[in-house]
Length: 240
Image 1 (tube, rainbow, N blue to C red):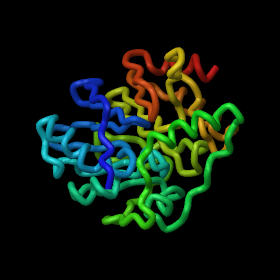
Image 2 (cartoon, rainbow, N blue to C red; image 1 turned 120 degrees about the vertical axis):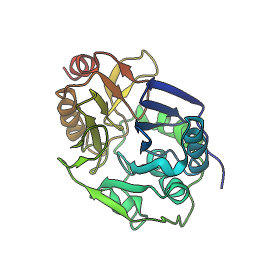
Image 3 (cartoon, rainbow, N blue to C red; image 1 turned 90 degrees about the vertical axis):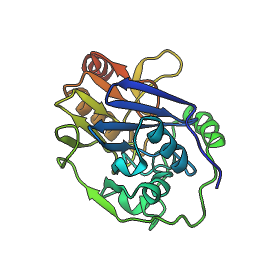
C-alpha cells in the first residue's frame, strides 16, 4: 500500500498536535500518558501516524481510541491500519459506522457546480482506496450527546449535513472543538466557512450554527488551519 504521510505537524497547544496531510487533517490529543486520535487520514496513513506518535514521545499503543468525525476516505481511510498497529478502539456515529466498516458504500456529496473542480483536484492527491479493505476491529457506534472519557469529558455533537453521521467533538473543560468537515477555513482568505462537498446543504448550515453556539477557544477543522483564541466568536461571525 502507498504510504500517505503528513506534510506538516503542528503543535496547536501542549496537549494538541495537528497532522496536516495533502488532503485533510488528523489530530492527536494527550491526557497524560494516554492519547486520542481524531480522524485518521487516507489509506496509507497508519504507519506515518504511528511515527508521528513516536515523535511526540509516545508509543502507538498509548493511543487508546480513534474518533472519526465522518466516513470519507480522507478522514477514515487510515483508521483500520492504525487500529491494527496500536490496538486502539475505533468510534464513529452509528449512521456512518457501516461505511467505515466497509459493509456499504457511502453516499456521495451533492455538489455545487463550483465544487466539482475542487473535488477533482482533491481526489487526484489521495491514494487509491483498497478494493476490499480489511477493518481489524469493531467500530463502537456513537450518537449525539454521548460523552467520551478524554479531555475531562468529550461531548459528541451531531453535525449532519456533510454526511448523515458527521459529528463534532467538544471538550468544554479545555475550550476545544473538533468540527470535522462541518466547518472549514478557506485556503483563499483564511476565513472560517461552511465545509464543502455536503450531502444536504441546509442540514449542514444548521449544524454550522449549532457548533458556532458552543463555547470554544480553540477550533480544529478537517481542512484549514485551526483558530487558536476566540474561536467561538470567529464561528459565530461566520455563521451569521
